[in-house]
Length: 170
Image (cartoon, rainbow, N blue to C red; front, side, top):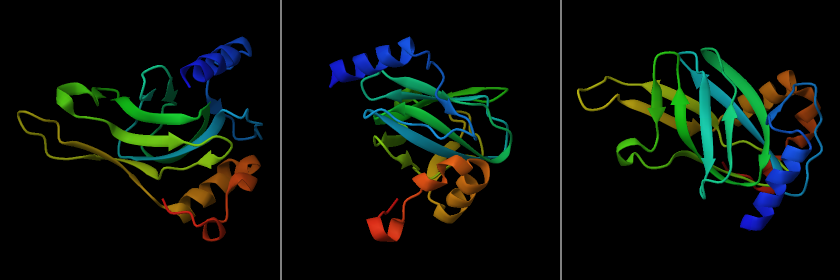
């Protein structure tokens, strides 16, 4: 499996695909080892970067910056499991692996499909002397997600699956 990922990374670099963002007008064709990841970010402040890392630490990608509010972005990434490593705002960076915080916002990207883990929601709680009280989670909002894909990424609308037919549960 490690060899497959290494070969896939080399193939992407040779092809010049060092940026994972899919443009709203794109209708990408995926290799057998790639998937699309739709992230809907719901945040009360601007986010400069969200850094994902694979379980084996070999694969990584960054979400693009986002303004406060609700926004969607789609990325083409290698299939596999990823967790958020850091979230960077204009004034601070949250390190998911700091003080044994453990893996947060983990996802499995399946090849050949448009993956949606849920809306990425950031909530800021009351800080204490020892913790920032930052909370993050995925919240499934399927109808809002599908409407955003159809509106902002019309070329990806055919990638939406009939969840009732496929027995999909987030």
